[in-house]
Length: 255
Length: 280
Image (cartoon, rainbow over all chains, first blue to last red; front, top):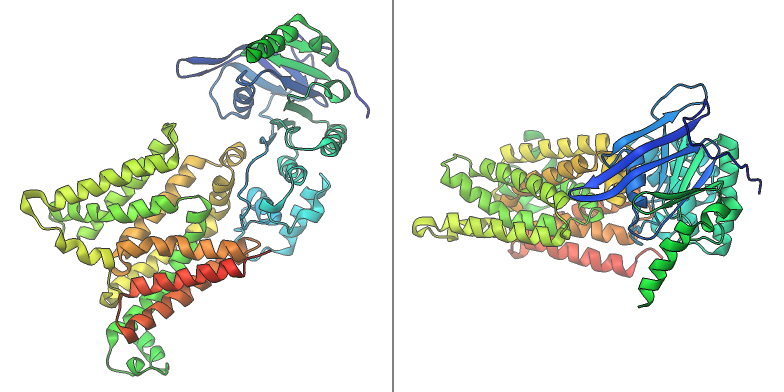
């Protein structure tokens, strides 16, 4: 797997295509979930967001997705320097569909990507369009399966195919590595690498799996209500902040 | 209606002969409208896990009638429709704002509404018995004007389905994902709940409060056991509702029992069969 390393960006986007968070804060009622969150995510870069449970990873995703009001600024700049609202693809954390849901993968994707009401017979053209979406994540064969009958890895490929239609500037994955086995994890990481190279998209994912970080992430962001460390995987994993956050947590859990 | 009466007279039943038994012919037409209406709505009631909500709506709909009667409306039913709409929108709002589980919020709303209804109905020593008819319902009392009203509602629901089924389905399947794709999940839920409220309230006079929820739950519950995609889901739900409704009406005519109850029992048999022959 080829890994491009980017320089850590501290100033502006410097003419490059990037997502820039400056001093982002999120409050829910009285509680301060996030404060002073600043980092840059360049196009074609894979960044992993790590932090203990309750560190605000999901809140940060929601803020970027525009589902949660925030202070500070979240801006996206294209390579031509123009600022615009980015298209964001979102793959939610292993969703629990009802095993009995009478909804096929075709129904699910067609309902999300088109206005054609899916309780009526689906025209061939729409079927082909959904097939094209699914083939991006090698999930074409799953079209007529029910979403409740998919395995964890299959469901993830379907959700990713959906997140890639329309092709986004930024792909956000909430804990994509939980609930897939070792093979599934390898396939997923290879696919992310293939996608970022093919579409030059930025990928931001949250994970608890520190062992594989070095093999795929260009950048690791350690979050606990604010950014404690950001940089290449090796730097962040050996930083005092990382030791402190995860050792303290383990220490407390052991008591 | 003349066209309908002419059509029915082609059927090989003694009540279908021209010139008499109009109540039965009206009831059959009403059932042909109500069954698809409930069959379609049922698919999303079950998908969105709203079975208990529709039950609560049914049980509290008579509160609206009591309020309508108290306000001196000529048609207390419109009071009930307004009450059910307020009930469903307030419920959608509170559920969104509260951290409580959905069924807890429904329990709070349901018991409050039922208590309010009994309180108003018995205010000043009033008797509750005048509401008994609503509990069981009487499909044979349906008039052509009301059938037209039900048909209009079926048309509205069909339009809603064509325009909004995709977003309603996504909101029911995965609210966070729907939200990330720009679907306004709160309004999807509000529209669906309001639609259930109106349909339940307007049909309770004929179907009966105690059995109305079976029509909203059983067709889709059975169809879920059989269907592999949304088209089959709708087909099995609507077809099941139609067959069971017609069967229930006929049974009630020939052996003399509540049509609503007979329809429910047929639906229960349909559910049992769907369990036996469920998709592997």
